[in-house]
Picture 1 (cartoon, protein in one colour):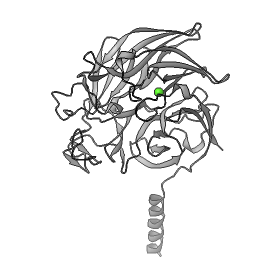
Picture 2 (cartoon, rainbow, N blue to C red; picture 1 turned 135 degrees about the vertical axis):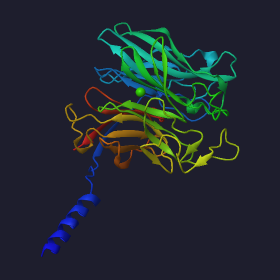
Picture 3 (cartoon, protein in one colour; picture 1 turned 180 degrees about the vertical axis):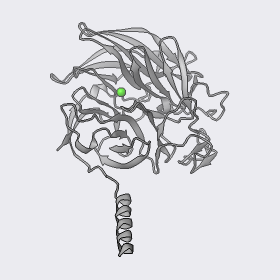
Picture 4 (cartoon, rainbow, N blue to C red; picture 1 turned 120 degrees about the vertical axis):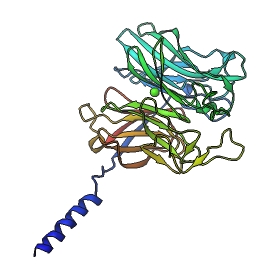
Length: 376
Ligand SMILES: [Ca+2]
């Protein structure tokens, strides 16, 4: 009798263990608004604009035909207006990879705002690429946009190769500082710690000070401090090995020495030394093989806003290019990924933000702005 009870309770425990609480997946309402002139064409595929949103719902988009134009988009009137351009015509080829990579809001009032914008441009010798972060002032009454100064210029300036590995993603920490990701830019000497300088790293930047946080990143297109205070980063691996990383100051995340991905070919700009492992380096929290090509990372708001995200509240959403989907990531308080799910959207998602009402906004490489809410 005792044995039966023991067996039953063991069974009950094992049932609990093999059935972790899986969040049921929501159905989504996706409204698509054409913002075509904010996308960047030219040689190469069209690239969707960078995106940021003010508290009152006003949207800023970065890109356009010049690659460097910041637009304001009014969600009520659906009007899209250029505010100004950051990249001089001589500082970029007609190539969609030379486009604003992100915009962040440092501070905002009804009449003014301070912004950061990042972009790759040609360096002084014109044969090389650097990633720049400018501080901008916006007069929200007159729509006048002014460059206040430059906070950051990546070094070394490297030959034009994988400019899509610029990264250049921003996350505003407060009114005077932000996190910044710099990709490897396809630099053939990225495996030299002495030569790679700022490439493949994350930084905390202010107007006058740059602090290196971590290194060994290939192309980090998502960066976020979540509501538990964790600095999280998503990055592209080569042919697999896309990663979700928890960033700790001083750590090396391994690129190009180790990866769960595979080299493209023997002629690629760098060949990883070891594949299928990150041994000896900081391991990712999670990785995807095959690649999904991750872009922006956001946290679904807790259910205090006007949108009720149900079981998704507090979870992470990652946009993807290749998979044309959202990836929902359930990361628990112990930094363990409990489950992930790929949710098809049918468009390449370039940038994503949560707006003040708790809705998810995303830009796509088709030149659309998607407004995504749960269908409960
Ligand atoms: Ca953004």
